[in-house]
Picture 1 (cartoon, helix red, strand yellow):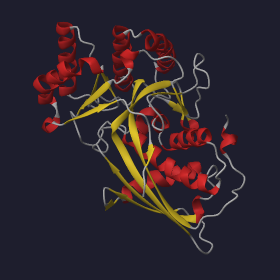
Picture 2 (cartoon, helix red, strand yellow):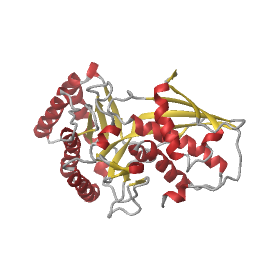
Picture 3 (cartoon, helix red, strand yellow):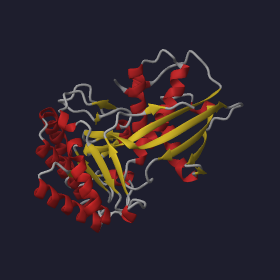
Picture 4 (cartoon, helix red, strand yellow):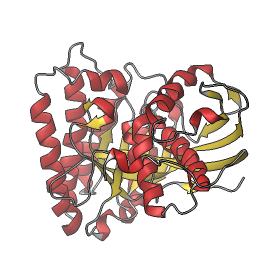
Length: 362
């Protein structure tokens, strides 16, 4: 599909008011997306586990405007409080998607949103937040055009979410989602995320993700700024090639269940992401001392026990601890006894692979 496929010339029905509510999960990338072209197009493909507990719930209420008002009209509340600082990002999102949702200026929108996890803490809140908003807007478009297929609905939701936040394209569905064109994955696209299409070994079903909250504060550098640093990065081209190669390797690993090789790729991808930030201009170190202590504890524990535990990182200090269901009891004891001490206020989140976004009753 191309961008033109997501433009509808007209709608058979009209609608004066209504409400929709969606919950959409965050996701954790295994092969990282870092670096993008114009229009939120990724420089390399990525693949992610969709999460379950870490999610955003968004309720969208709308009323048709009267008169000749030709502006975007919306209010935003986050966990019950008005959030004017969210408005610029939503304004930019509306500007990017208006050609695909031409009804946007015809309504006043009330956006009420909440997270099950700390905002701006290295968990992908933009992924869950922008995907939930995109799904609400698509519910409105589907009501204006009831003949819309469920496949078109999902793809366009991911397409729109991408224009708000690249990683949001991977939060519409589960359990494994690919975003970015890859020669070995049919129907993979730079425009939207697609469910991973190949066989997945039982070793990768019911995977856990325990998120160790090393730092719950604002990130030192936003993802938007971080991506821009790749434009003239001296190692950018090799990194983009590496992303393609690692996704190719994971296709075989997902099929044969090779957990040691999975661990090598996932941890290398996490460290490469941070290496790119540490070697950009300007440069950033987003890991904290406790991040490194946790990583070393994981390596020691894995060496001692032979358990298949590994880490990954987003663009922040928090550590995502990945491990299979059948080793969860032993690893959870390790988390409580050894790792919680390195978390801010002892806080961590227990999550696992989820199945994508859900529409909720109003």
